[in-house]
Amino acid sequence: MVVGASIYFPPLFKAVILGFFIWLILHHLLRDWMYSGDIWHPTLMDLSLFSLSVSAGLVILVMW
Image (cartoon, rainbow, N blue to C red; front, side):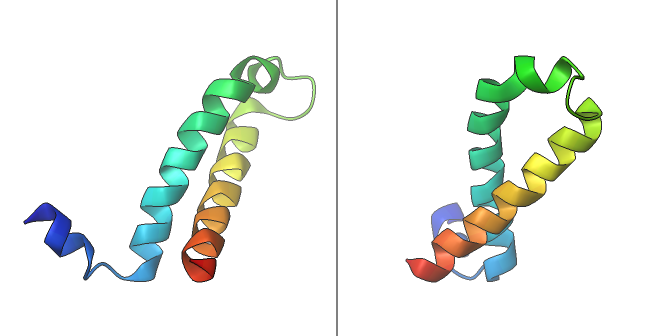
C-alpha cells in the first residue's frame, strides 16, 4: 500500500525524499569538513547542502 501510494505523490515530495537520501550520503562524507567551521557556519552549510540535494533530486526525477 505504501509503494502504491508513492506513485501518487506530487513530484516535489518525491524530490524531497530523494534529496534526503542524497543529503544523508553527502552529510556523512562531508561531516568533519562542515563542522570544522573553516568555511561557513555548520548549520547554514548543512541547510544549503540539503537544498542542493533536493534540487539534485528534482533534476534526477525530471531526467528519468
